Length: 265
Image (cartoon, rainbow, N blue to C red; front, side, top):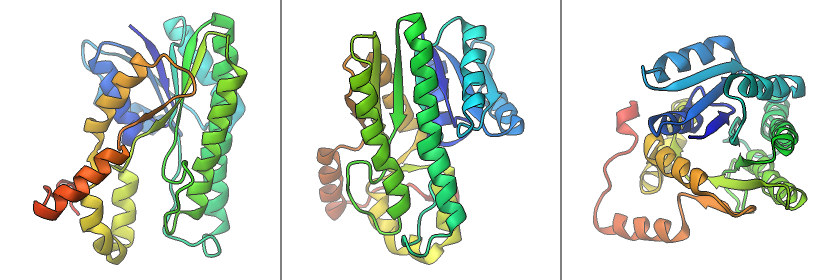
């Protein structure tokens, strides 16, 4: 049974991961920016058999991340897996047009927040002598370009380097460091952006429908792979190149069930 901390886990893929781990009998600490969102998520996760608790945490504040680690350690005694999942996706603008406030929010959450999580978790795990740290990557992290994602993709690209560097620095310590590429998942952020820009969504809907997946489907796979993970520096990828090619070919002959309709889109 593993003790797991997931940042940014009151919704989206983070919430899905928490549910997947709990359903497998593990213990989970969730976190989000506000006490209200944490309480709401706990209400949705709690069952008589599950062992889950939570703490509000703004990962861009180092002291709050330290408090999250201490909370998990005090509650469960140790932390076996720490997942830096908290992130912001503000897409749809060119690099020149994106509002400055959106740039700063993504940099603080996606980059500074993940750095804080890595530093705090690595320091704690060095003391306990073991542990796994995972960083959630995303579109752009492999260097690929997507229109309207220049800043977001740059923030995720930096996390690829960060994860490689941390993995190298922690070799021989008993701490494993990994990367997570969840693929295209229908999250609250995707739904929000689709409703904000329905014309753009309509243009890409058919193409995206061949590639997107539901949170629960992806989260169960990723949770299992993280538990099995045993080689530092490696990447756990849901949507592989082979899977993309197969889906696109299949889409030419048979229309896939609409993955967005169930979300009111």
